[in-house]
Amino acid sequence: MKRIYIWLTIIGALFVVICGIGVMVEGKKAMSENEQQQKHFKVTYQQKIDTLDIDSDSRNIEIRKGSTFSIENIAVENNVSSKVSNGKWIVKNHTKKPVINFRPFNFNDKVIITIPGTELKQLTIHANSQQLKIDGINSKETNINSDSSQTNIDNSTLGDTKLTNDSGQMTVHHLKSHKLNVVNDSGQTELTKLKVNQPIQVNNDSGAVSIQFANKPHNSKLTIDNDAGNVDVAKNIFPQHKLGQGKYAIDIINDSGTVEIK
Image 1 (cartoon, helix red, strand yellow):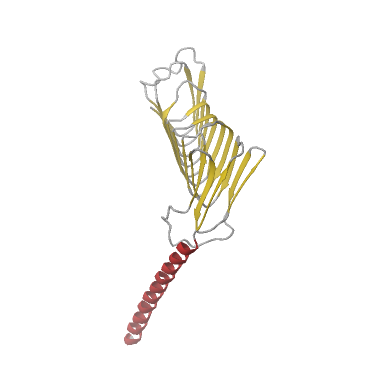
Image 2 (image 1 turned 60 degrees about the horizontal axis):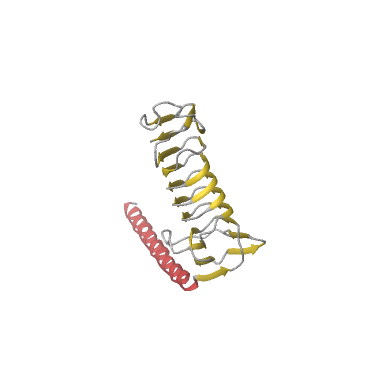
């Protein structure tokens, strides 16, 4: 009986090793096929564009300042659609079926969108489960909804801005806006070098929100509605809740998360 147990153990170990080797071989094969099948296209638009609408659930997206309106797709699957009509640019990317990714850290799978220095009337983005980067963009009205993505916004002027972060990580640096609404669920949202003296509303559920101003507010009124969470306001930024005439309202609504203003 003891010999049977030994042989069963040996056979089981061999089976695990063989299966592991098979997975590695198939993984390398898939990686090779992916590299061979990688689809790459670039389209430049000459017509006037004042609205950009992006809806994506499976791709890294970069939006940056360029000399023209253009879109470049570098990815294994060509499941990106791009269309311009009557000044509205619509970009969509949706995965049709589940895919086992043997290259989980391959950041070459991405869509690059360039926008010239002109101001967009409206920028709308819904991003889910990928990395979103925005740099040097100018928009009059902006609505960015990030589900479980990693979102980075740098050096952009986004006008009337709404940032919604579900369970991902959102980092915003040097944002200029004339009105800001931040909605954070269970994710982490960090804003640094934020323009002062503008209406700001923060709704935080169970996540963490950190705000660092570029300069000290001097004409703002701070209102805090905190349930079971923690709101920490630096005394050197807000020695009292009303500064100057209190023209610009900063409303913090916090449930069970953490909000920090420094």
